[in-house]
Amino acid sequence: MKTETVGDATFETWTVDEVAKGIADRSIVVIDVRTPQEYMFEHIEGALLMPLAFFKPDALPGQSDKRIVFHCGSGVRSERVARAAIDAGIKTIAHMEGGFGAWKTAKQPYVGTNMATGAPQRVTG
Image 1 (cartoon, one colour):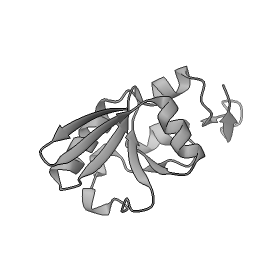
Image 2: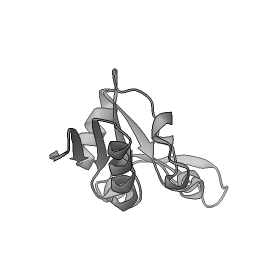
Image 3: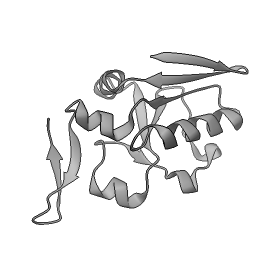
Image 4: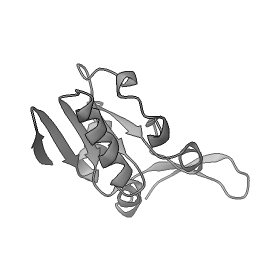
């Protein structure tokens, strides 16, 4: 993971593999900052949704038990949200490098949409 000090806060950029490990060992909560439509079409299973347009840093869960890692489609929106969280006084925050595109490229599992039925389905690799 890459770290950057911003004032007295720490901004982290996690790789897809680090996020996958954090999900597996239940040490992180993943927050998707894409639109509700993007999330409904496909998302990382278990990720919470807090779209960039409605982002409220004071609504974030505490990080005493699990770290927060934001993600979006490419990493641009999640970086913006993470930096806004720092501006709001959160001392340590992270986002996933490359976003959901990198997640899919790495063949990590996710929930997609069955185009024949419109129903959600698990997609692996």
